[in-house]
Picture 1 (spheres, each protein chain N blue to C red):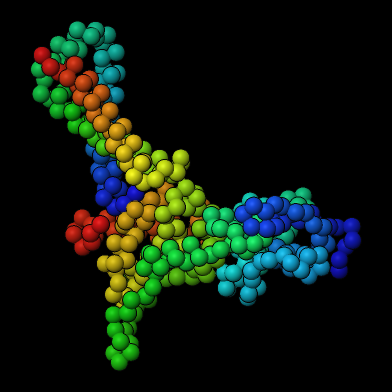
Picture 2: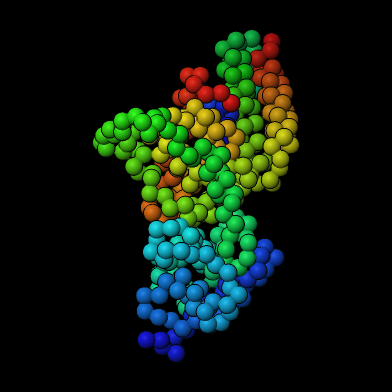
Length: 243
Length: 109
């Protein structure tokens, strides 16, 4: 039941990079999420408001935005947990260009995923037998810890090194590279380690751990990046990779 | 920072750690014993050991700081990589010259 006396003051980013924040009044609801608030504004106050979402259940990674200064997946973030005295400030993700309103341009994020060789390179064909992978081997345990990424971009938006260094590949791409480095079925590790050992790769990370703090999937990209630093350093010293 | 610079920075840091501790111990020793400049120079002049110790220290400090300053110049004032590298190398050369000048002043007979 809406309570007319209970309203939120919601400030939304409008426009592209040269836009500005604009404030709306939104009725509070029980169990209301940030995505609910944004949707309410679009359906009731301004249909031109642009934002991005798909699954609404925390699987697709489409709806991440900056909420009261912090990157969050908006479909699983309850207003009651983040509203500051009934106020919300919602903007597009940081560290990415703004397309319009709350929609950030995710292209740099996914291009860096490609640069980090985040694509599985098969070592067998479909005609070969399926390789048996034991789940309790150290490599598989390490890979499993990193595989639940939903590509929401929250870690990328939270990362100071991404903000400071335009070449830095970012936590998500490096975390993906770490999951593949530990995948015994993958055949692309020389190219991958060379990509992540270059300037802007894993060694640029300062281990601030914002990625780990904000990851909605509670992954730890900082730990993955530390693993990559060790692995790439060994590979370089042993002459397996070149710069 | 790439893996090569990373290795050099970690190597020089590892090397400097015991050197810094020895350097601090020497300072405490010299001040607690009330050694004058002439007493210190009498010990260091012509000493290959002190020349090697501080020669390695100065070289490691110059390499370490060059790499660190390069990163800072790329990340904070957003300088291009080339410009940051030139400035960092310039700083490293200044540190090497100042450092070796100081080492020469205390170890040359």
